[in-house]
Length: 88
Image (cartoon, rainbow, N blue to C red; front, side, top):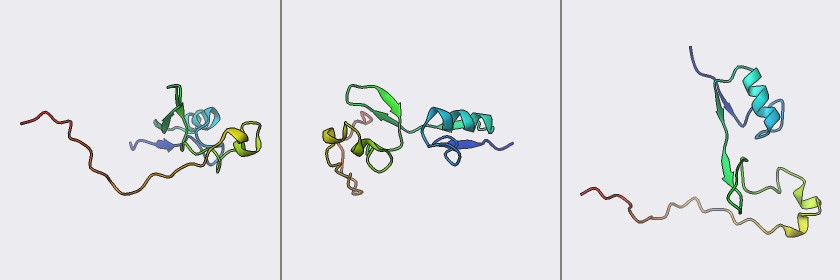
């Protein structure tokens, strides 16, 4: 029997990355829930598809809109990272 994997919950019925979407995915028979995790500034992990809230929420029109800053997109270019391998 193939495994059913849910991406962002049942986002066709509920808003993705919400408790309702994950509950609906379980109800629909998902075996695995894919929950993208972002870390808040104070170190709390949350399920959220992107760290940029402006395109997917109303945060810019809320009382918190004045606190938002332009989001700098990450480059697709891979940069070399120092090796952490201790293998000979």
